[in-house]
Figure 1 (cartoon, rainbow, N blue to C red):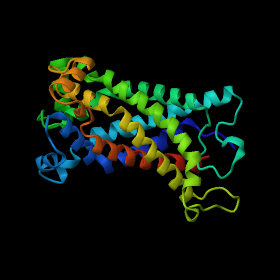
Figure 2 (cartoon, rainbow, N blue to C red; figure 1 turned 90 degrees about the vertical axis):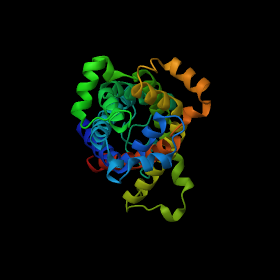
Figure 3 (cartoon, rainbow, N blue to C red; figure 1 turned 45 degrees about the vertical axis):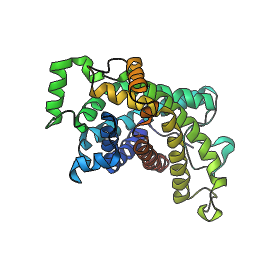
Figure 4 (cartoon, rainbow, N blue to C red; figure 1 turned 60 degrees about the vertical axis):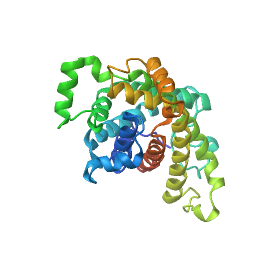
Length: 301
């Protein structure tokens, strides 16, 4: 089976990331607003939005960050994983043992290789897209009254310099790299186990015995949602710390000082603030993005 080109992974990642970003932006906005102030509830954040349209505030930077970031991440991840598969002299786009019923055509690696490549790819892409992330968080927040992204960029540049566009990269990397490593590891394991967990009525096969598109999509999307949920819960504290550092840089200057301030002056559980929305968004985002990505990769092979 021939290998897919890098452009295929770029297109698949971009399409999946764009679709999930636009569809799930309200959850991202509400998460930011719940995390920004002590005691804010989801309902208060919804009321504060004032209108349905306001729930999609920040969609442009979110869509740019997620689509471009997803494209870069999935293509770089595939390059790393394909290179490792080649070194082991294993086919990079076929399932172990040549099982045609497999739902995926991505490289098959060991658990520690999936963990390492997922973390490395996310850390690299996270640094590249960090300025967009900072703009997105500031624009979504009610702590800043930016009327446009250009105004937000000018304000950050004039008041904080270039460094301001990378504010919170430490906790972001500590959140995203472990998250991505855990996600890829869990996702690959889930894809192998999921067919046996689904009702037999959900399993459809083509004439050659391989999974149908609908079956593959169910297996891949379900695996993605479960894996994202577990990885998101484990790395949730880093997300809260990252948001605080980006929104109030004068008060929260370092990772450890922010951690101490939240746990001592508020409550340790505040580190999981916004988890329900991030959990919902991450799970659904992974299901949408990876479901689309996997099928596009197979389609263009």
